[in-house]
Length: 383
Image (cartoon, rainbow, N blue to C red):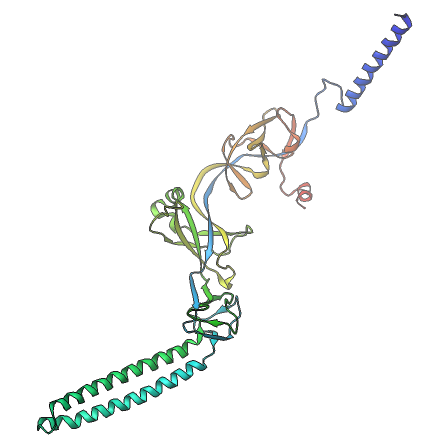
């Protein structure tokens, strides 16, 4: 090979190596072998505290009393007197059925009572006349027997007529359908003009008492044995967590435990009652019931934001004595406010990274400073 070509190739190789080194230095910001600048992080100490342990169960709301409103007589619905979804009082008129046929039936029954009473009075008078005559043999024994029978038939006919009139009067009253309880009235299931009553549309609406409101909690057998043993937690003050995460303003209490475990579902039904002023809560709502079941002594606590989740596992960046990071796996328990209860992995007094967790890894040097929960930087991030 030509000597000039060899020199040229050597120059090119040197230039390529020099360029690569320059790029490497520029990308890393500094030559290899020089320690990286410590990362500024905010830390807090692991603290210990006695914390309440809560149990939480799925639940649903129901009326304390749910009354199904039905028509006991058949007729055409004439008027709906209540407004759907509003509070009604016991005895309040809800619906009215066309009562013309029932008024006519009552008049007819009343007339039959009058006639039957007259027939009975006539039979009694006839018996009064015949009895003395029978004593003197002025009339036959057969005539006396017939008079006694006629008086008995007259009495029975009168009593039957009275019963028919009473039923006709009751049927007339049934054309005005009232609420049997105080509560919230549901949507009407029949419209004005519909034929309602036995043999047609029977259920007209429902009324539910919702203050207090009943909350049904299906406990598994394991939950029942764990949380209700000894009856202590059956007297606990309960919190009701609604579907949007908000907590109902009023505490409740357990009031009923079913007599047996449902063999199909493996659960036992437990009911609780919660005050519900204003009837805000309605039957059929999804909720969760929770109660404080015990106190955990000396629980280790760290802020929730200090716990990093990686592929289903949780770890914490611990700052050791040399201001280097030790990524430490932890086992977390229940939440306590904005803190995690740490069951395994940490000890009281250890410093953990709260702000800057995304900038650290195992062995990285850090410059720690106390975590300021309400610092300007935090306020910006909270917006």
